[in-house]
Image (cartoon, rainbow, N blue to C red; front, top):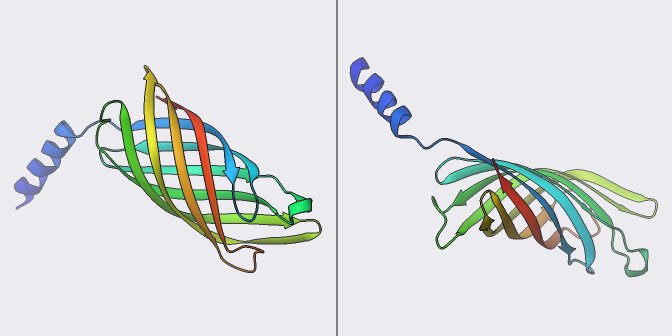
Length: 158
């Protein structure tokens, strides 16, 4: 039995694809309750079909629209196509983390969850574009418990 387990582990190590990492700088828009600029950074590592990433994002406040600023730090799991198809790698993602919402003197800090998907599009060598859509569900007492964000970013694999 031990020989079988060792042989299976060795076979997995020999045939496993190396982990690939990437970084994305992005800009976009949080659309709830009004469109506001969002910017951020995502750092990830991918194994064949499963990936993991940490993402930090910041959305500006719009006092005239009563739309709060929002900062999120999320850890996510990605389920992705194992190889790019025609230079495009599609993914679905879900994750959890913390957020801080501010509008004027009001502030809320609590846990949040996100779900979404997108595509990483190869351009030249390790450089590409990433397109992403997320739905955020914020816990606690935020002004808006469900938010939508879209973004495009410069993605570099290493």
